[in-house]
Length: 226
View 1 (cartoon, rainbow, N blue to C red):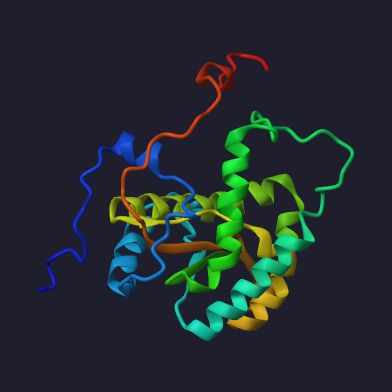
View 2 (tube, rainbow, N blue to C red):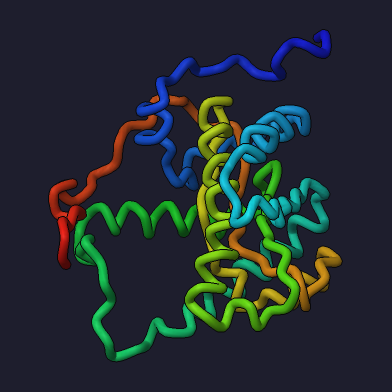
């Protein structure tokens, strides 16, 4: 392969197809097929074009493909999943447009269980992070909006680029309950580098993903007032 040739066979999806069929892939991750680093780097190159606050470009992606490190990272993620979200037991109603009694949620729960069993077998894990001067920046709504808005678009761009390259991803945050432990494992400077998520990366078993069930789009739009 010469240097000008892509490391993948593009799926040839339209922009709308990429945006509407990039699913959270858990059950259909191919655990047996290695993912070339150069293919991942192509998706990173796409992600560098995502907007960041003040064009600071203060995000990084940490990729894990060493089996021993993956196994330890997966254990931290599982521990976080078992611990639950900090506000999970709040008495306040959870804002959601999906019924947790629905068959759709049942499928999600089942695929999550599959990921719990196999996360350490996924070819590559990715942890996006955002660099901050100090963690206190995240204490205000503005600080959160600036910093999350400087890394999440890049991460989503990566996931979209991965989809076009036949790769599956899934946004997860369970390990953040034990963010410091993950930082210690990976050598991340905890005081000024904030982890955002963890996503598995693997070729998908089949590429025929469809738009998922969603609420009526008209329910999302508000004009001039709430």
